Length: 60
Image 1 (tube, rainbow, N blue to C red):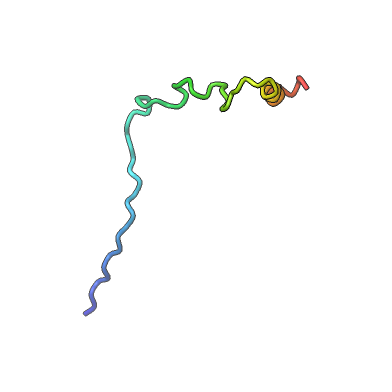
Image 2: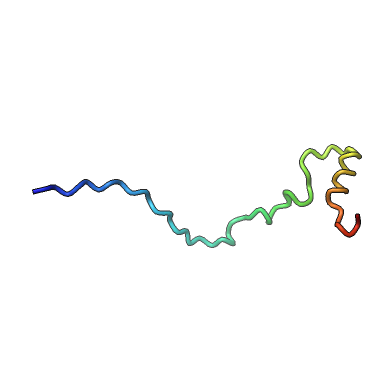
């Protein structure tokens, strides 16, 4: 008689989480990142570059 092969270990399936998503703070709930650019040194050349980068197309 042959023996049954040993079962290979399976990877665990992703668990479903039924927590209330509104209980957790999202990135929109903070003031971080609202129009701020990293490294704001107050340089006028950098300000001009930012202005030209963010200018709407109808203002060209």
